[in-house]
Structures are given as structure tokens and as C-alpha cells.
Length: 546
Image (tube, rainbow, N blue to C red; front, side, top):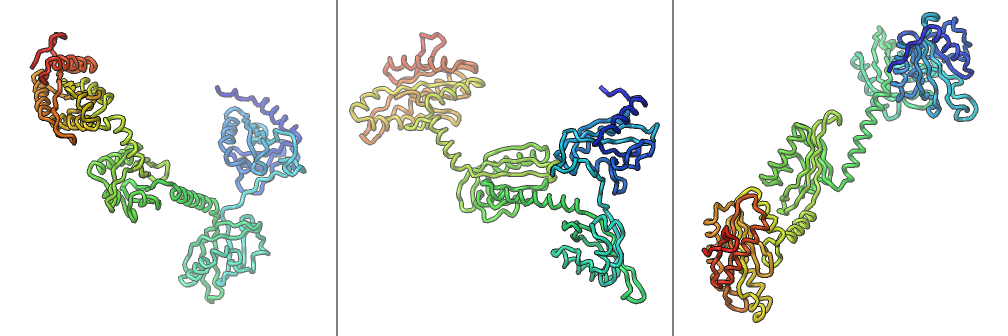
């Protein structure tokens, strides 16, 4: 909701209230926002005015830069509604909050009046003077002019030079200009001056100049050579521009770049920054160590370490990062030039205009040990350590996944007379028989089939994509043939027989139900003691021999 515009009488009341504030500092402002002399009609003592010593100064020159928009908003309110208020902090004592008031009294006095007053009681930081006492708007000029002889002796300076650097004419005139140049810039200054005298054409150079307060200002100098009949009478007119802010920003950027470089060098990951054209902008010293390379000269060096699948995956992720700004993380197999197999985690971070350098940041970590550990844990959770078959849990998981989309057959395999082998020949012989059984089962299966050990001497074959009961029965017959041959183990040759139960179902069947059917069919086979596979029939209690 916008504020109600103040009437002329209300604005005059505001001005009267500001004039009664004992410690407030006031200033007059023209319609364009520039400070201007206070009209006598306002009737304020000169010692309460904001002192001016800068051309076209504004209130922003006395407020901390971070609060510029706060001041602008209050100014816009004053222009619209007659009065604008804000709480700000001054550059001289930024820790002291100030009330800022703009009031439009152009109808009676021709100006806006601004008042600054301290919000908290007390004195300045040194305890001796109020924070606004002697407040002055002072801004160094950005340009100035100096005249010199051909020997670089200063002959004349203007008032702006004094305000820019703080030196008086008496302190500069008669001195060589090099006396005011930073020692580190002397060589560049002399080379530029000699170039000027040789070509007698304007020359530009950036040099640091000493201010009277001991600080240094970055100045861009344009030296204009003014010829004379006698070369000794030639004059050089130097136009000086203060570029300290620009150079400070440049130095800040360089500091950030140095910090980034130190940071990337301290990381345990390899780091590489790429342009949109996949050119390497920067890479840290850790990257070649992670990749097993002597050095990384370009992106092709990384590509050479990957197989076709790895290159395809990396390029797809990198293209998304560069073209769509999508970050990605992937794990890639790497083969070092020495032939060592490694696993690397690769993170791609998209960079855009906001970061000032479009492209991508690629972070590479060696995760070989953790990947191997993960594989070992996965293997332990998935496979039977003795036979290498799937364990019960993973077998049932495979069966459940298969039945979600395809017709599937299962064969329940239970070894006959396995206990006597353990009892007479020992458990080692029994283990060998189990390993032999698993190998023979695997030998008759298709690529997508699996063998699971679901009990001591019980196995379950899962065959996905089986067309119907006849194909399932054919699978059972192949398994019977594979197990009909006696097994050769360390203790000798032992017979190998098994009871086989077969069940088949379409997608959507409960895996537990299908397994139970195969189990029931296996018991029928075991009761017959003939080693023939039995296919489960639709009538639960009437399995039909194959």
C-alpha cells in the first residue's frame, strides 16, 4: 500500500521539526538529486549544513555504498509523496545508525531538504565529538592535468591534481614526476617516457602514484608531447585518470583466481575446467596422479583411458552439462598407460555466465578400493560362497523381477542320497558334489537363466522367457541328462542323481506360489525315486510325470 502524499503544510511542518533537531546536519538538494547551496529562506545556521567540497556530490557520497538502494528508495518516496525516511549508516562511522529524511519544499524554497541525525545517543568512536560533527562531502576528482618539461620535471599542476593526490603545487612543481611513482613501476614509467620523446606522439601508461597521505593511487596517464623550436623547450601535458577502483577490482579478481588455484591444488580429487569447446582452461596437479598419467595436456588424454562404453557415457553427460546446464555424476572404468585397472568417480558441474566462465568443472576421484569393496559386499549378498550360485534371497529377487513382465519356468532340484556321501566320504566330498552339481546346471542354461542354491542340497533354476509348459519340460529334461552322469570328486566317483520338479507360469504370478508348485512336483519325483522330472499340473494334487 502506497503512502499518502503530504500536503504543503505538512511538509513545512516536517521541515520545521528537522530544523529543531539540535544535532542534525542538513543539506539542500536540487531536483536532479545533486547537493546544492542551501537557500537563505530556509533559515538555518551555516554550521549545521553538510559541507561541500566535491563537484556534483549527492547524499550517496556520505552513506556506506551497501545502502545506496535504501537511499534511492527514500528519495523516490520524497519525490512521490513529499517525504521519504530511511535508516542508514555513514561512511565516516559506519557503526552508528543514522536517520535520513528527505522533504520536498520546492514550492516555498525551490529545493528538497535532507537531514541526517544520530539514532542512538552518544559520541563518536573516540568519545570526543558527535558522529555528525563537521560532516563533509568530499570526493576525489577522477581526472587532473599536469604539465612537465621534456626531462619530466613538473612545471604546473591544476587544482584537481591537489584534490586527487593531496599534494600542493609547492610540493610538486620542480620535482621529477618519477619522485611520485611507485618503485615497482619506475622501469615501466621510464620506458614509456623514452618512447614518448622518440616518437613525439601521445603515449598511455598505467602507474601507481603516491598520495600525500602515504597511500597509492592507480593512474592512467596520457602524455601529450607539445613540440617547440628548441627541443629543450618542448612541453608534455599529462592527463591523469584515477583508475584505482578498476585496478582494485582487477586485483580482487586475481586474488580470487590465486585462491581458487590454491584450493584446487589442496584437494585430493583431480580437477579440470573445460570451455564449451572442451578446451582445458585449468587442471590441478592431482589430476594426472588420479589418472596415472605423466601430465594432462588436453581432454583427449582423458578419453584415451576409457573403453568405448565409458567414452560414450562421459561424452553424453558432458554434452548435457555444456548444452543444458545439467550436472552429472558417473563411475567409469579407467585403464592407465601402465595397464592398471582403476575405477574413477567423475562429477560434472555445469558453469554458465553467472560463474563468468561458461563450460564445465570436472572432478575425478579414484574410488577403486571402495568399488572393489562394494563389489565384494554385493557378491556376498548375492552369491553362495561355496558353489557360486545365487543365494536364496537373490534367487527369489530374480524370480520376482522375471514374473513382473515375462513367462517364467522354474526347476526345483533336490539331490538324492546326498547325506550318505557326507556321512561316508566327509563334508569335503559333499561340498565337491555340490560344486559339481552347480557347474552342470549352469552348463545347460541359457544366457538369461540363473541357478540358485536355496538350501543345503537344494537348487532352483530360474528360466525367463519360456514359452509354455512344453518348453519348461524340455528344460527339465536337459537338466536330468546333465545330472545323470556320475561325478568325479577327490574321494572317487560317486553317483549323481536328483529329484526334479518343474513349474511354469505367466507374468504376474506370485514367485512364492510358483516356487511352491515346483517344490510339490519335486516331491512327486522323489517319491518315484526314478530321477525323472515332474511338471506341475493345473490340478494342485495331480502333477503329471513328463
